[in-house]
Image 1 (cartoon, rainbow, N blue to C red):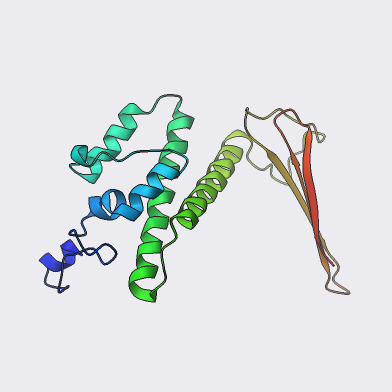
Image 2: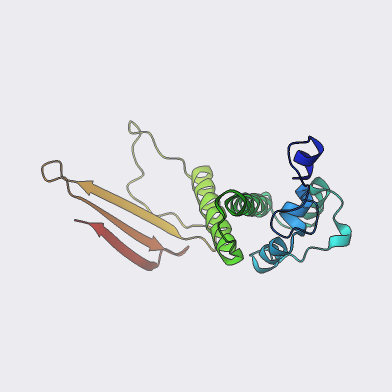
Length: 186
């Protein structure tokens, strides 16, 4: 809103949610009171220090510099931040344009689910890309996963004569131990 106001495209620079501060990028994603709850209660458990926020880019650099661990850990961290920002933006727009109430818990859950799904798919594709059909498949051997990962196997079938389909899912932990299974269809 602050940028729109400067361009004379908005009657006010104020945040449409809190109505007490100009809605800058920093306010929208970090400083609005409802957003602080999301960062603190989410997986990162970040407490936003208002006095240290100068720009959005500087905040991201501080997070990057303080991140410990491998490249994969940093990628997961920034995936989570990106998805959190995306869901904050979606909630803000739904509030602004569709008059939908904001529920921080839903934003946290959606952000976590999006980041977890994205990171799991990214890791699977980087570790073992799908073989081409012309290549032999490795005899169905199971390969151990990285710690804290779950392997999901999915299979489906469809009967062209009756139009019915079935799907099955099996989940195993990093040691190959059965966790859960489910089926759907009929």
